[in-house]
Length: 110
Image 1 (cartoon, rainbow, N blue to C red):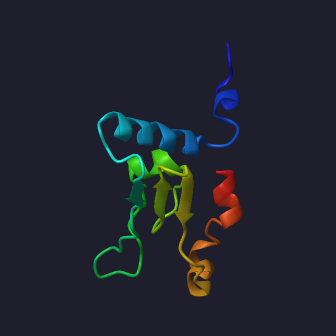
Image 2 (cartoon, rainbow, N blue to C red):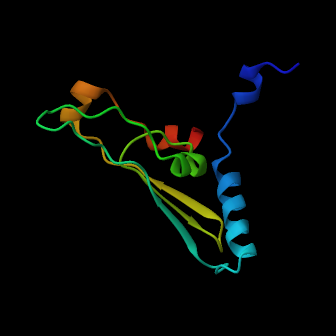
């Protein structure tokens, strides 16, 4: 029997998921030269407070990217099969309270 840690180790297959979605769009008559665009969940603040609400990434965004960071965007060019994950810039004041966000290198490994 395969151990769970052996199943989930390795790089997240985001590009394979994006290709699968692109093929589905094409099979339904969609434009084969189009672009898939998704917005990740945005940071939401608690009303009358300076604290963010508990964060949960949008499921479709996570499926295509493997990214669990807020305020990100994703594009996938169906013609060239190029995927791009846009992550927000680092805010030094935020790092003091929340720690460092994901780096571009970490995003590539995710």
